[in-house]
Image 1 (tube, rainbow, N blue to C red):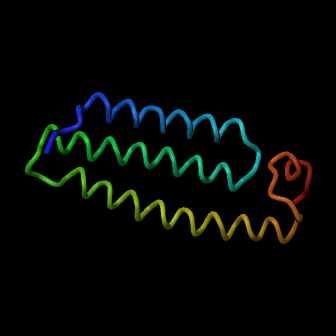
Image 2 (cartoon, one colour):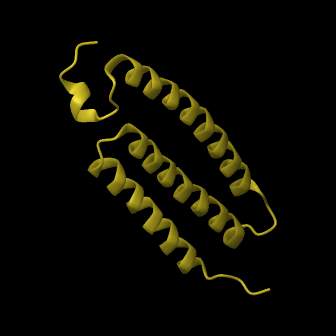
Image 3 (cartoon, rainbow, N blue to C red):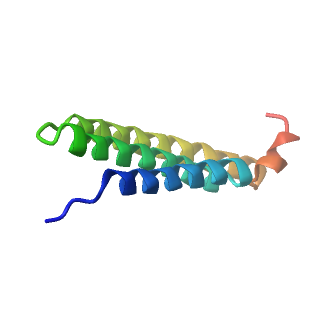
Length: 104
Protein backbone atom coordinates (compact mmCIF):
# COMPACT_ATOMS: atom_id res chain seq x y z
CA UNK A 1 0.00 0.00 0.00
CA UNK A 2 1.45 3.32 -1.04
CA UNK A 3 1.55 6.29 1.29
CA UNK A 4 0.13 9.65 0.35
CA UNK A 5 2.82 12.33 0.71
CA UNK A 6 2.39 14.63 3.69
CA UNK A 7 2.46 17.70 1.44
CA UNK A 8 -0.66 16.52 -0.42
CA UNK A 9 -2.56 16.02 2.81
CA UNK A 10 -1.50 19.44 4.08
CA UNK A 11 -2.57 21.08 0.82
CA UNK A 12 -6.01 19.45 1.10
CA UNK A 13 -6.29 20.57 4.71
CA UNK A 14 -5.27 24.12 3.81
CA UNK A 15 -7.84 24.28 1.02
CA UNK A 16 -10.58 23.06 3.36
CA UNK A 17 -9.51 25.55 6.03
CA UNK A 18 -9.59 28.56 3.73
CA UNK A 19 -12.89 27.46 2.16
CA UNK A 20 -14.30 27.41 5.69
CA UNK A 21 -12.86 30.85 6.47
CA UNK A 22 -14.25 32.24 3.20
CA UNK A 23 -17.68 30.74 3.83
CA UNK A 24 -17.77 32.06 7.38
CA UNK A 25 -16.92 35.64 6.45
CA UNK A 26 -18.77 35.90 3.14
CA UNK A 27 -22.15 34.35 3.98
CA UNK A 28 -24.86 35.84 6.15
CA UNK A 29 -26.93 32.71 6.68
CA UNK A 30 -26.42 31.12 10.10
CA UNK A 31 -26.61 27.57 8.74
CA UNK A 32 -23.94 28.30 6.13
CA UNK A 33 -21.74 29.86 8.79
CA UNK A 34 -22.17 26.75 10.94
CA UNK A 35 -21.18 24.52 8.02
CA UNK A 36 -18.11 26.69 7.46
CA UNK A 37 -17.04 26.19 11.07
CA UNK A 38 -17.39 22.45 10.55
CA UNK A 39 -15.10 22.66 7.50
CA UNK A 40 -12.50 24.44 9.60
CA UNK A 41 -12.72 21.78 12.33
CA UNK A 42 -12.43 18.99 9.75
CA UNK A 43 -9.28 20.54 8.30
CA UNK A 44 -7.79 20.51 11.81
CA UNK A 45 -8.78 16.85 12.15
CA UNK A 46 -7.00 16.01 8.90
CA UNK A 47 -3.87 17.74 10.20
CA UNK A 48 -3.96 15.82 13.48
CA UNK A 49 -4.28 12.46 11.74
CA UNK A 50 -1.67 13.28 9.09
CA UNK A 51 0.96 14.46 11.55
CA UNK A 52 0.25 11.52 13.82
CA UNK A 53 0.73 9.11 10.90
CA UNK A 54 3.97 10.68 9.69
CA UNK A 55 5.64 11.71 12.95
CA UNK A 56 4.52 8.94 15.34
CA UNK A 57 3.23 6.08 13.16
CA UNK A 58 2.77 3.62 16.05
CA UNK A 59 0.98 5.96 18.46
CA UNK A 60 -2.59 7.21 18.42
CA UNK A 61 -2.51 10.67 20.03
CA UNK A 62 -3.64 12.39 16.82
CA UNK A 63 -6.54 10.01 16.45
CA UNK A 64 -7.62 10.63 20.05
CA UNK A 65 -7.49 14.39 19.52
CA UNK A 66 -9.56 13.93 16.38
CA UNK A 67 -12.20 11.92 18.23
CA UNK A 68 -12.32 14.61 20.90
CA UNK A 69 -12.79 17.35 18.27
CA UNK A 70 -15.55 15.36 16.56
CA UNK A 71 -17.33 15.02 19.92
CA UNK A 72 -17.02 18.73 20.62
CA UNK A 73 -18.20 19.55 17.07
CA UNK A 74 -21.30 17.37 17.52
CA UNK A 75 -22.17 19.16 20.76
CA UNK A 76 -21.53 22.53 19.10
CA UNK A 77 -23.81 21.67 16.19
CA UNK A 78 -26.66 20.52 18.42
CA UNK A 79 -26.52 23.68 20.55
CA UNK A 80 -26.16 25.91 17.48
CA UNK A 81 -29.09 24.32 15.70
CA UNK A 82 -31.24 24.80 18.81
CA UNK A 83 -30.27 28.49 18.95
CA UNK A 84 -30.91 28.93 15.21
CA UNK A 85 -34.35 27.30 15.50
CA UNK A 86 -35.26 29.61 18.38
CA UNK A 87 -34.08 32.64 16.40
CA UNK A 88 -36.14 31.55 13.43
CA UNK A 89 -39.23 31.04 15.56
CA UNK A 90 -38.87 34.49 17.09
CA UNK A 91 -37.85 36.55 14.04
CA UNK A 92 -38.84 34.35 11.05
CA UNK A 93 -35.34 34.70 9.57
CA UNK A 94 -31.87 33.30 10.05
CA UNK A 95 -30.11 36.02 8.08
CA UNK A 96 -27.49 37.91 10.11
CA UNK A 97 -28.31 41.27 8.51
CA UNK A 98 -31.98 40.98 9.46
CA UNK A 99 -31.31 40.18 13.13
CA UNK A 100 -28.96 43.13 13.76
CA UNK A 101 -31.80 45.67 13.89
CA UNK A 102 -34.06 43.58 16.12
CA UNK A 103 -34.24 43.97 19.86
CA UNK A 104 -33.85 40.90 21.98
